[in-house]
Image (cartoon, rainbow, N blue to C red; front, top):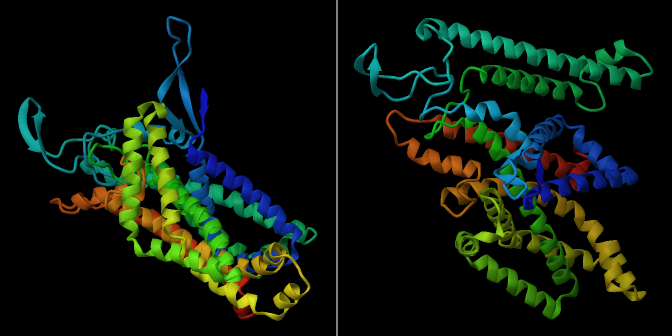
Length: 467
C-alpha cells in the first residue's frame, strides 16, 4: 500500500492541525474561551457543531488516500494500481460494487423502466429484477414490505444501542463532574439545565444514530437512495460529495481571509495613494463577472493539464488539481466584499483616541496594526468568514451546474444537480438524485448558517449581552 497525499488532502490535514493549535490558543485566552463557551451554550450552535463534526469525519475519511500494490514487473520493479482508494471508499466498498444496469428508485427490487427480456422462454416487456436490490426475495410482491420493515427495525435497534452507550457516557461524565452525583446529573440532563445543551445534542445524536443504523441495515440488501444512469449508488455519490463541499467552503474562505485582511487594513490605515491603489484593484475585480473570470481560469488550467499529461500520475490527481485551483480562483474573485468591510472598520478605528495617542508617542505602524487594529477587527472578520463558508458551498453547486466547476469525474453536489437537470425532464421523473444532493447540501448549509449566527452573537459586543 502506497500512501497518496493530494493537494486537498494536505489542506484537510493542515486544517485539522490548525484547529488543534487554535484550540490550545483559546484555552490560554480567557476572553476567547468565554466567547466560544457562550457560542456552544446555545442549543442551535451546539447541534450545528455536532452535525458539522459528523460531516467533517466523512471528509477526513475521504481524504486518506492510498494505492494498492500490483504484482512486480518482470524486471523486479514494484508496480502500483492506477486507481486511488480512500478510507471512505474502503468503507463503502460493498455499496460501490453492487451496481445495477441503470436507474432504480430508492429501496426498489425492480428496474425503473420497462425492458424487453425473456421470462420462462417467452419474450416479455416488463420491469426487470435488479442484480442487487431485493435479489434475495423469492416473491418480491409479497415479501418486499415485510423485508424492508425488518431491516429498518434491525438497523434502528443497533442505532439505539449505540446511542444508549453515548447517553450513558454523558451521564457518567456529568456525574463525575458533580463529585459522583449521578442521579442529580441525570435529573439535570432530563431538565436541560446542564451548562451546555447536552440534552439537545443527545436528541439530535439519537436521530443521527437511528438514521445511520437504518441506512446501514437497508444498504445490505437495497439501494437506499436509488441508483443513477450507470447503476451506481446515489448514496455513495452523496457521501463522496461531502468532502468536495467542505474543501471548497474552507479552502476558499482561507484564500479570502489573508487577502481581505492585508489589503483592507492597509487601505484603511495608510489612506492616500495606498488606499487609492487597493480600491482600484478590488473595484476592477468586482467589475468583472465572477462566472466569466472563473470560467476563463478553469479553462486555461484544463488546457494546461491536457497538454501536459505527465504532470499527474492518475486521473484523481488531475481532478484534485482542478478542485484546488478552483478554490484559489474563487477566493481571489470573492475577497472584495470582506476587504471593503475591513477597510471601513479600520478607518473608524484609526480615528479613535488610543490609536492617535500611539501615533503621537511614535509607536511604529506595524505594531499599531498588530496590537490595536487587528485584535479589534477579528470578531467582525470571524463572523463574516463563518457566514461566507456556506456561500462558497452553494457557489460550487452553481458553478458545476453551468459547467465551470469541479471536474465531472469529481463527486460533488453541483455535478449531481447538473445530472438531475436532465433527469427531471424524463418521464416518469427521476427525482432521487436531486433529492439526495439537496438533503445533504441543505444540512451542511443550514448547520453552517446557524453556527455562524451563534458566533456572531457571542463575538459581537453589541449582541453578546442579549445572547
